[in-house]
Length: 206
Image (cartoon, rainbow, N blue to C red; front, side, top):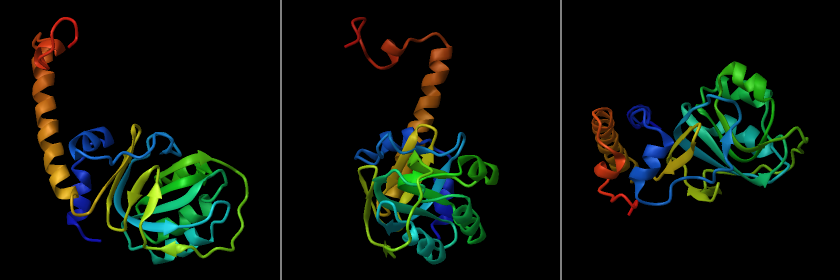
């Protein structure tokens, strides 16, 4: 887990820019949202296959995940409070970078106060059991996208992307170029050019 501090924090690109630069489906379902306003996620995935309504796998993941990683957990989208303030404190003590969970989380206010980024399918206070140890480190499907340990995960107010390890450097290069091009477009728009002109569209929008 030492990819030039996670590709220089994904070079500050938004999830939208990275999704557009990828040229392949990397954007998770829009149903995966930040648990609290302003959360931003960036790190390499440590994957967890758990079971809906059971959070024992997450307790094991917190102990096993390398510092700086993002726990990425498939809980089947279940509406239970799989993660809360206790696990947040434990994760921060282990220097983890955040949580991405296809399932529910709770304690949004407390998690926000601690500044720990959590992206989840839902916010739920329904209690969980602790029976299934889960499987750590194998590929999982979260928000409709297959994620493997080591993949680069970036999340913000607009959504979440998961970039495959082997493709992340080239995607970041294309994102750099796209961001530079967009800055040029902004300058031309401020100079009076129209979007129809800049994108080569006619007046009918074609």
